[in-house]
Length: 96
Image (cartoon, rainbow, N blue to C red; front, side, top):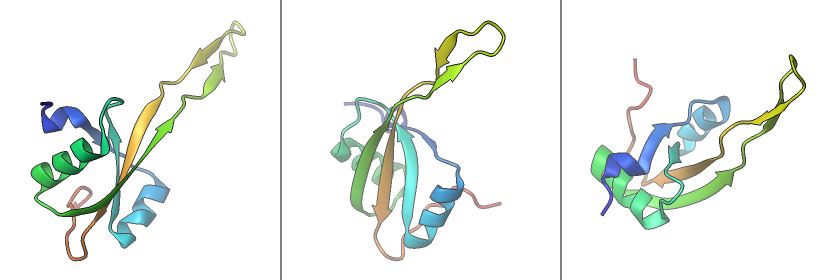
């Protein structure tokens, strides 16, 4: 069994993910080998909340050109999870 901290890597900080917080949906970068039940269990155990639904997506890294010598590099690919919580639960990720 994996440690829950190995499944969830970091929260996604973007304008779109902040907009989803209003509908009780939180976005995380997760391990590429993580399954939906593992993600659900990790979120429920780490943050003490109830998860309704987990959606996952694989994002391929962009190909970027190096201006100095004309070669190409690639950003790393990542797997993201959109976790919907039960009404009334919340995760205090970005509280000041």
